[in-house]
Length: 79
Image (cartoon, rainbow, N blue to C red; front, side, top):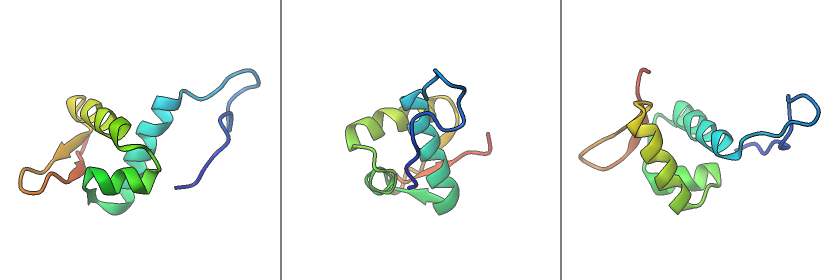
């Protein structure tokens, strides 16, 4: 995943919200790959697995992600 400076596109004096950036990286990765298991998603986005589980759980509870029952893979919803 492409690394970006913390203040890209932001007015001087503002910094990115790191958890939002990580959440958006998850959405972007799933948009490119379709569906992935949490461990593969963590590797693809360079987010540690414990953070990944919390982020995925949050995005899933908000209706942005869907977890497949048969293999636990994560995919985007139409939201």
